[in-house]
Image (cartoon, rainbow, N blue to C red; front, side, top):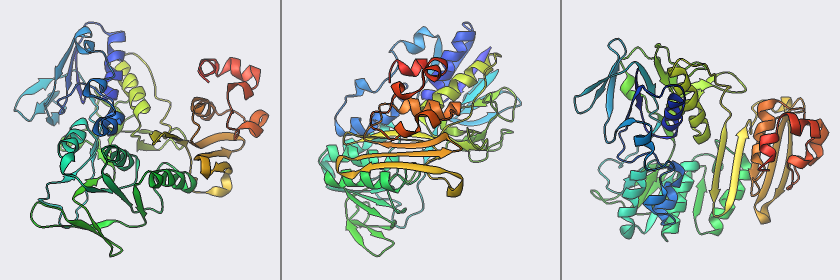
Length: 425
């Protein structure tokens, strides 16, 4: 059996381990357009800021590929897939035959058309190791950077540049930073922490023009009419599933590659996992891209298992974001900003002085969402309660307590559902 995996991040790692658990002899080829072995993408801001070295970026052993008998093709880009002939085409002109194919290419940064952007040298994106390396290479020549986008990517770019002592301004179109994953109070607490560390945050505005002569940047013009002098721009609006190379193939692509609960696409024998996949949502059962690190691994594991012919199904993606800024930890999970508020009950606790916030979203006495800022140690219990649809009535009064944990759950619930969580809570 010839297994081919396009992409080499966490979904690919999950798939490889699953394949080898069921098939020790099949040929596995991984094709990656990047030049690095699998690495921790959330670490790129620390690499930029000098908190870690390149040696710390890998999260798998050096002999991972060799031990598992993987043919690793780095710095190689797939430009097409022929599902009838079952081959993938590389930009260099080569083709590789497959029996089972996994698309795990992640996401590409979205760069909108902005007047004056073309031809400017110090315009960057921030999603890969090489993006961080490019920024670091010119850091000596950066005085003031404007980050376009106040989501997770933008804030991590801001943090990395701040660690280098650079002046940073974040410009976000929404009324708060982290608008997609967090609610207003959580976004404001994070913004307060960033401002306390010298990072300017501008909301409800956006960049409409990059100014400067030739390749140099002198500033950005905002929609409001304000001008921010700067010499560097980082575009961090978000990512899109990296599925452009599938155009013309028989594989169904909506926003991402549409997959079933085995991670199989519309073409038999072709699978997708991670940011590029459009899989079932845990609550709505609608199919959406789920650009979340742990979920990508789970999808990769399920895809790898299914590729060998074994049976394993996806329980549905649970939206979850976890990130730390200036030693303030944040986690959001599930439904955090319900569209129809009348169907939900919301409990909150807030202490902005100590950067503490907790929000619990309930529906029919069951936890469906949570936002934790400043105290996230028991987050695993919250996600377990959501996934298992537990009636929280017996311990409802403890949910907002900073010390809420395993001890507050009824003994029978601890024994039947959360024994693994209890060991670490």
